[in-house]
Length: 202
Picture (cartoon, rainbow, N blue to C red):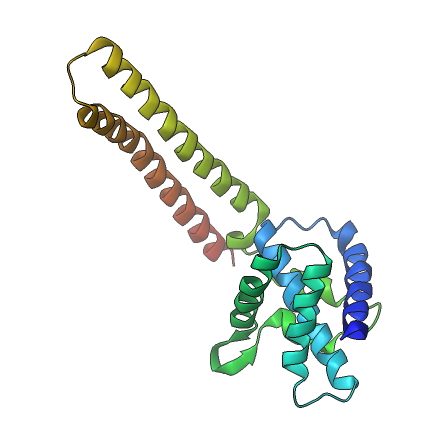
């Protein structure tokens, strides 16, 4: 297992250096998942080459879990991450995901990780720009909703005395909902518009 992990670390360092000049702009979660699935494919092939063909896939997942631990991923997150990657490593009809397949077939020093990412450069749903739009919208809804609720609660408490605590809190929640719901609907509209344009372009 140690040899498998060492090999994966070397491949990761080499491949990340090779794609640095590409300027890929993907959502962080998608980028991390793709790299991890690619490394799983690399580890799987390496485990087979060590003579563990029958249980090479499971050995690769075990090595990947230890790899995450060594990269200081919190222990409680490692099991959940491995479970997630297990699900994502397979697609319909029990075929391997693209990143896994290319990682498995990769050779030292090639541009295989770039080959994986090149398949998704025009995919709006995993783009960094789309992720940033989503992240901003989420923050606007969260902080905007909390701010509106606080202001309404403050106003009702100060200028409309006599209301019960439940009535005051309810007014704050209603005001927050009046703010959040339109922002959410606008976000959905922007999302559908971008996806539609992306499909038309492709």
